[in-house]
Length: 357
Image (cartoon, rainbow, N blue to C red; front, side, top):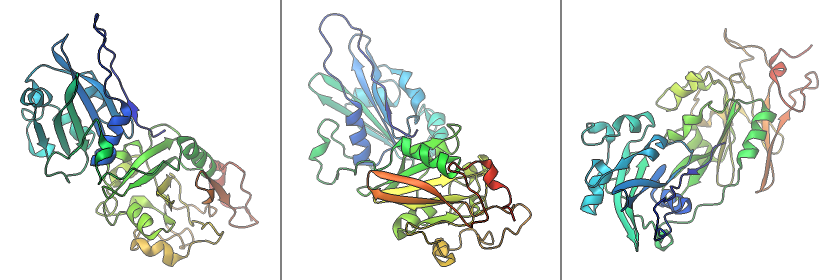
């Protein structure tokens, strides 16, 4: 399940109780305000004389997680330096600096983080350094963020409540026969679609999608902008300039990807097999023209080619139809391509056999 995870350290100091610290909800608000993908609050411990990660939040629950156990002395490293100066620091492009400038360079590159910002924060006895990271290079300065009262920012519109749960994505995967499902929510205030919910049968397939930026022209962005259900018959044939996640798709052997726009985002489901059509809410099959709104993304890998090609098997037209009874209830159902094909309630590998005569 794709979900934000927070880690809160508990003070073991004896004597005077420690002041209440930063919460995961505050860090999540910081992400929504700045467009960052993870946040860490490094709080100063007067007992140990070091900065410790008091709270950490990431949309996917993994970004920069190994950092949580680190400690920084006064003036040590990027975090310690910002603490000592009581100021801010922006590493706009971590790939353009050396490890002396940014000690966690390799970790950031592993998670595809490009920009990291640091800012000293204090409210009463709570004092430390806020760290924010983004997979984009949009920041030209440390983004403005009041960690303690983020609601005062007039430009930070409150994000819509998630309309898709992790449990729903699991149901989508089990019903459609897909390998994974992702919900990309639109964050209008920063102009981005972000992966905020995730489910995969094996727990890992396409999980690292959340580290990618969804740029203009990406199939997900087009499905959202055009509000059109879209099928990528064979995503592995796309060009990397169009599909930035192509190496990840090939790594997990994903072939067909279906995209379905909702009110506040896009649901993506993918399979290692080949789907040949996608069905609309009204029960009609999307036309070739509709599917080609993504600029013939798949080239010759047409869903209407009758299964031609050495790597294509004759498969039933397996599609996943999304019905919206209301905003809180969304489900996928299999649609039968013909009366000659029997499709069980839960799609299984047997569905990928040639249809019976």
